Length: 398
Image 1 (tube, rainbow, N blue to C red):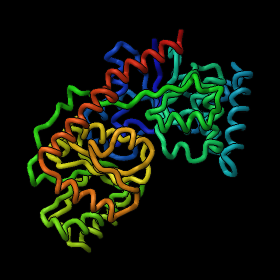
Image 2: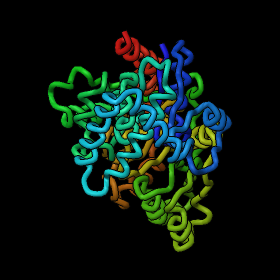
Image 3: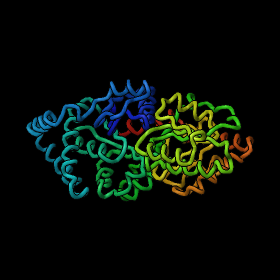
């Protein structure tokens, strides 16, 4: 069984869960071919990501001229298949609205290249329901392998009609949701006739790599990991720190990540004189992230938009409570027994949750960490999730 994994941009520092998922499947004997629309535009930090980039086939790499040549050749050999794909492209472009045709023509060219490159694959699995699922669908219409996709959310569900999500669900062999929240949104988009195609397979962590850590010291900092961007809301976290240090002047925060809101974050740190309280570290490799979480009092993620972040699972696996927001799939994992949840965008509530964490006795923090670890063992073991995916691939390719 040979499975083609299709991603938009791969590998990406902020999406190591896909690399780990592929590795876990390969460890169970699945032959994986890697395909991506384009490489990431930033420098890769992890050695493993650099190795993955060397193994990935990029669909846009040949350039527009050669891709058009591929389409012409396919049209001569397989006119009916190309017509089916063009019909699907036109349907999706119309649903997406004004100005979407050029983008969908690009999907068609990428699909032609994927069909050529994926000869020998029994199945294509796309991560995310957007352009990758569209390319997999068009490839299949031309006679390429059957396909499936994993839905993460939440922005994938913002406009399911414009993204032709119902069409993708109808033509896919199956669809994976990483949370019950995501499955519900897929069911809403696809209707009752696709319900048997929908499967919840949680993202996971390798428990052997994330053994429970000893209790954090009293002066341990909060740690936030993720791209610095409006959706992750680290700006609000710095504002909450400005409130927190008024009552807890020794409080500290470590921010790991980089992105477009870094200048705003740096300006806030300077304005509130938080240089000694907020450590802005930039991107870090997996070992450095793990070390930071191990030495954290709690992991903090004040996001406006998420699916269910892997970093929460990593913190839980290490026995660290989490402070996050009531959005998407996060409440399926985080609650008052293992952390604190606040309304997204509420700086005062976020500051209060940070304060409660600092005021929580060590024995209570330890019990929260034990609860957190148990949840990961029960629901988010990487190898159990890979086994479920393998079974789905086997069922789809019989």
